[in-house]
Image (cartoon, helix red, strand yellow):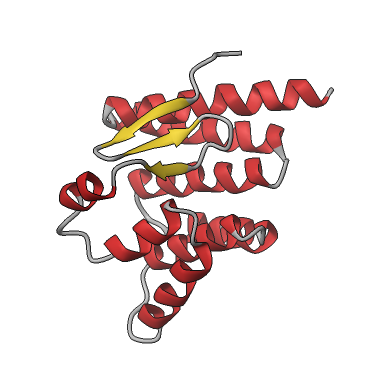
Length: 163
């Protein structure tokens, strides 16, 4: 097992290697890097450990608009509240709805995270490997490819530890 406690994320954030979840380490840097993202407050709440606050914000948005991204963020909020069955079902539905490989890879990656949190490590590894394969096929950024690869390895390690 690798000793690195974190996987590379982006400006102001990283992925915790044990949980495979994003964590904001420098909110001002994170906000500056995502200043144009209308979901910045939701991301800050989610990635700072406040999934209930994020869910409230998302539900307010969903009253006025609907998008796969909003529903994916809602599933993330459920996952982080321990409502993994709901999160998994939402991601499985979203995978069936998206029409391009890039979006499907994102949804597969998030499905993998929900499965991982639920302790379904073998299934999580399969989802991460699907995301990895798609990301390699469409030439995703190196950081996305590495994220899927590292998550698949971590899930396989967790699955092996159970046996």
